[in-house]
Image (tube, rainbow over all chains, first blue to last red; front, side, top):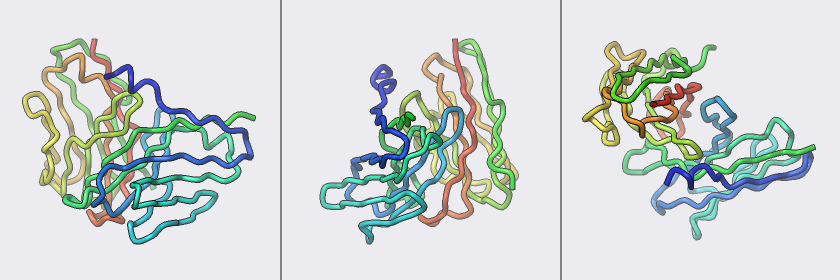
Amino acid sequence: GESVGLHLPTLSVQEGDNSIINCAYSNSASDYFIWYKQESGKGPQFIIDIRSNMDKRQGQRVTVLLNKTVKHLSLQIAATQPGDSAVYFCAEKDTIDTDKLIFGTGTRLQVFP
Amino acid sequence: EAGVVQSPRYKIIEKKQPVAFWCNPISGHNTLYWYLQNLGQGPELLIRYENEEAVDDSQLPKDRFSAERLKGVDSTLKIQPAELGDSAVYLCASSLTTSPGSEQYFGPGTRLTVT
């Protein structure tokens, strides 16, 4: 219900530490995955993506890992900064409709000094 | 380059009143999306346009929701009449194409409160 949605999983990390945000996806046929960052009052912002033929992809300070066996996705943020504080969503592409994003439950990342 | 523009940013209305949201996508983006985002949850697709054609409106509650993109550029989403449960953020997004790697760019959203 609505009250469940208010209690986002929260990850609190100290500035400079590494962060790992996890996501379980539902559709074993999904072949494209994206991580989004959403700051308060803003729309989701693309961070990094990965296709199902890859296990790992790296960007600037971010790494996405994909484990298709257990349908698990993770986002690693190196040297977490206060500006990384936001809600993070994973999304999968519906392969029947290849441009339909299905978002997972968000995780709130809080960075403290 | 300007991003996706939405207006208004906030709207408060009483139940049973109509409301409309406007979206201007990034220039040159043929695909436009409207999403609904409830508090603490991820966005859910309401409708997707390819130019002026609605190609996926399966999640749009057609009894009270309507959308249009007459000239294949900007779009409006309307609710009539609004219900208390419609309180949410309505996000618009656009992408260049529909290929899986074509990034969707989101606007800031319109936060609707129905009292």
